[in-house]
Image 1 (cartoon, rainbow, N blue to C red):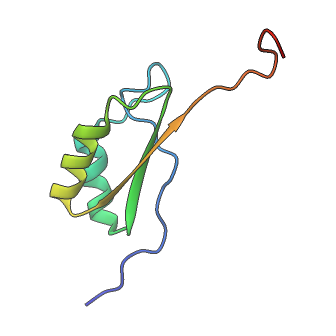
Image 2 (image 1 turned 90 degrees about the vertical axis):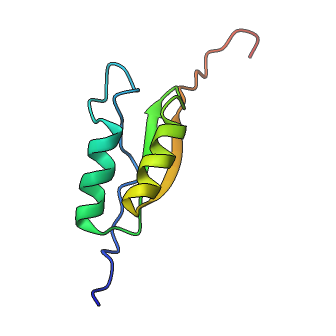
Image 3 (image 1 turned 60 degrees about the vertical axis):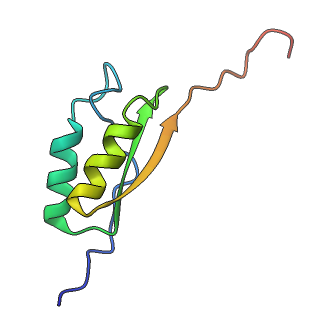
Length: 80
């Protein structure tokens, strides 16, 4: 029995992260399973629209899904 790869990507943009990401969820899960990481994450830009599809697809592929979201923060907001 081989040990899982200890490295996992924590910053991956899926196709739901327009216009930055091009990675399809199905392709991501399949490819991640080939490398046997402990988990893989998606951190789309300003959206969690891929969450359900990513969760179901990653679990079917035997990869633990981790969810994240990149949110822009403006320090020049009105009233500050």
